[in-house]
Length: 254
Image (spheres, rainbow, N blue to C red):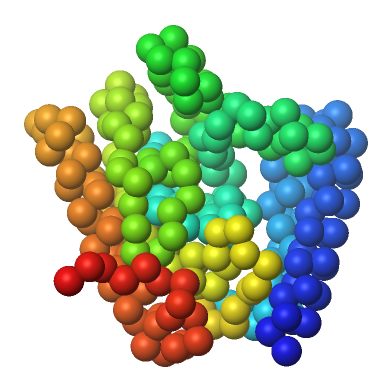
């Protein structure tokens, strides 16, 4: 049954995204606020409905009181494609920093560009950092918050590839708070997996952090510890409630 439900979820979900991307190219002829509205209010609600309807996967937001609709940077754990698909429904008008290669993907990448995503050359060194700062400043100056995946790539639940300091660079130069976000999404929508598991995927927004008075090592260590410890808590809770997803969690070595 899980295979059939996963198949239906994938077919309807990605078909909705595909159609949305094609229509978005037409909508992009209008001002960007129309593009944002169309994607956030018309495309994604339908796409996310299929996840709930077929896969039985629900979303729960915790710490909603910590969400700032503008003048903020979000540092989100990246376990699954679900973060990239659903975050705009959690924090309206938010935009992402993504690797520039994604912006060249036919239709989907073009859609991200018109939505206002920020492509970054991860191998571009100092010039890429300056470009990223300038583009993020443009977005935050217009009231759009920005989310960054500080690990730079998806990681299986229970693992990390280390947090990169780009988010501190932005927070320091733009004088913005950083809001950590913990998730357990990788347990239900695993990286490079066809299967979609029923349950409750949690996005937990934690209290804002400031970079003021902290060294790069201090801030990045604190940020990683805050997010990873909360993710570990969410993972344990989910596995206890839904034992059939336990195989997606990488257990710590004792």
